[in-house]
Image 1 (cartoon, chains in turn blue, cyan):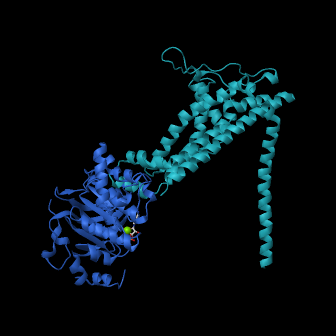
Image 2: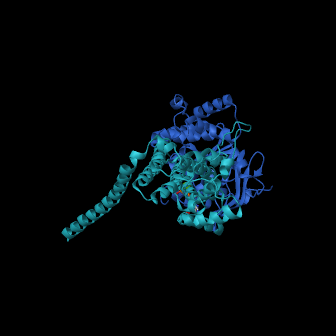
Image 3: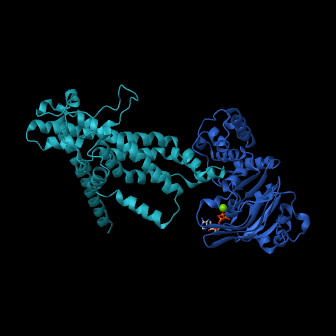
Length: 272
Length: 296
Ligand SMILES: Nc1ncnc2c1ncn2[C@@H]1O[C@H](COP(=O)(O)OP(=O)(O)OP(=O)(O)O)[C@@H](O)[C@H]1O
Ligand SMILES: [Mg+2]
């Protein structure tokens, strides 16, 4: 499949900034809620084992964009995608008609803005993704649960109360539980929608540290409202405005020498 | 100005209070009268005897058994269908004019007088399907009656689950059915159960539709036992048996002249009220216990 990469790419800094290798890529992705066009031909590359941050003012379509990746919009009637989201290495367009959304969701994982643990035990929360995948072997599940909780830097805090309700943890712990739940199934791509917006600075710092750790194994796409956060943790940044991609580039460059006036205005706090 | 508003406030408070007192007072009075008249009659003999021409030898056994068996049929038919319909409407059905229409109809059905259900059942179960005036017919009739209530309360319980919880399950790759079975149903179980118990407690006191489908008022035998001593040890003959239920037995006694039968009626009423209150209490307990466990 020929990808319209060149035409859509808006970074003026040249090809040298193009990430490689790619884990995923959106090609002229448009999205409609009913008749309302919310994403306008957005093309963004997602580099493998990197953190890509998505920034932009409220309502510009960041969450909508993220939720296209695991076909979350399919749950609601009247939504429509156009264009492609290609997942590598198999170069598959996950928006294709023949692709089952469940198959897509098996490969990706998502962490939501508000921690949303199930009202079940900590253990069951993390194990649920494995159960959905038909894994029944108790030893395998035990092992994966511990591994995921360790990766989410939560193991030490909950190892003595795995049977406590996930909803009884603190906000920061709940969000790390949700990250553990997402990691337990070894996703290829981890989607995070403002994962720290409901947390205090200490919990935020611990999750940022965690993401730095994780990116050695997982590709991460994170939406954030917080530009400092994007600058701190990400390797690549995409700036969106009113449903359009304004600029994409390496985080360092985008924050020091933005190519577009709009980007500059946004990151210097003149609007948004 | 303020004085006038204060006056109005006090006045309204008094009005509200007296309305409340009137309602509660009437209830207490009614229940008290029932208690005084009936408690003396409510003994073991009364619970284990058949009706009789002599008030002092009469008992309520066939009515208690009849009510229990009818409720059994109602629960076995009404609950699965109602819960399944609610799940379908909430989780599977797309919003179309048809589902909207079904929704409005179901809500309105909950307000239809119960005797209309009796008439419908008379035509459908007794004559068309030839089920006769049996326990099965009565159970099915009451199942129809509670269906809208079960559907509405189940839907409300399901709707109380935040969409984020559902999305979390879907994001992990769960199918719709897995989401329903692993999350939606367990988390809404307390609400659903409460609705079911309240619906059944309403059904147990229903008289009109049961009279309409032809329950007996004087019955001196029990339905065939569901257990037999020959394989397969289970018998469903009781389903086709004639029967009576508690409110009808009570009515039969009320309409007889004489103090003695009035006492019987009061005792039956007491038992009925007691059962209803017990079921309501159970509903409150269930809700309280399970609410504590499920929160988000
Ligand atoms: N379910 C929906 N139906 C119709 N329009 C929607 C729906 N959800 C979002 N929108 C609209 O789509 C646009 C993008 O919304 P989106 O939630 O993606 O923004 P966002 O960038 O994530 O904003 P925020 O930073 O506030 O979370 C908004 O204008 C919003 O009003
Ligand atoms: Mg958002």
